[in-house]
Image (cartoon, rainbow, N blue to C red):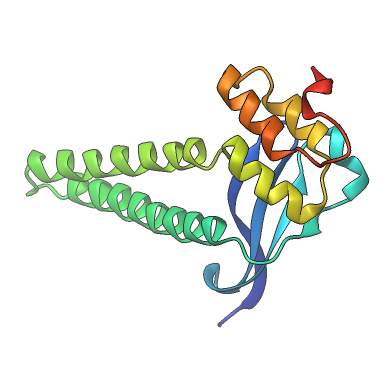
Length: 170
């Protein structure tokens, strides 16, 4: 039986305790086929006024992370399954089991790294936040402890003309 549904996937452009972006996909049996739109999802009390999220167009980074993680999930599943099948076969050699195990470990490591790579730089966060109408003060609070002085100056320069200085949140 074929099951067609929509699913949010591809968590990307994460700003810890503030927001992240996910894309809604048309899926067939949990296989993400076609992206429809991307949403900024609040991740903390600062953006609770957004409710469940706000549409921000289509986010290519989110789409690519979804498909990358789906491929890694398939690789992880089939390598573990293959290792178990080969290991239970009395005639199997140990080298094949080790090979499948190494593939499984590498897939799991890449899966974990994909979430580390999906963290937004402050410049990327500014672009996403502007699409959603998020005040620069909130971004400044999220990034102020992680930015160098040069990056702080760049942020100030980028926000010149906005309603307030983004470093007032400090």
